[in-house]
Image 1 (cartoon, one colour):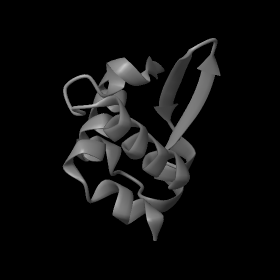
Image 2 (tube, rainbow, N blue to C red):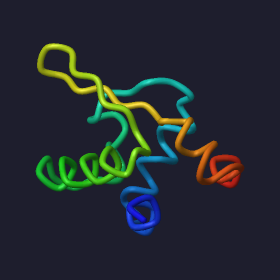
Image 3 (cartoon, one colour):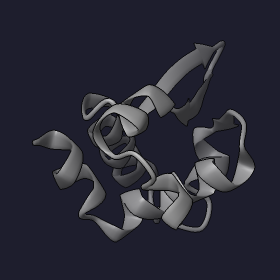
Length: 84
């Protein structure tokens, strides 16, 4: 299942933690600030999370904003976010 593969990586888990802690939408730069080393690396991690249905991505001009897809967490991993 793509969800478990996505959450198995420390970098992606760090992005999820940042989004959960903020409780709101963040830019990709903000969400990956202390987790991701390069822009291409960030794109890979955000794409993996999006394809697993764990985040939602919205583009505004040149900036991409991400937020948790809480429906996926509630459906497949109830209580997971509370353990972060």
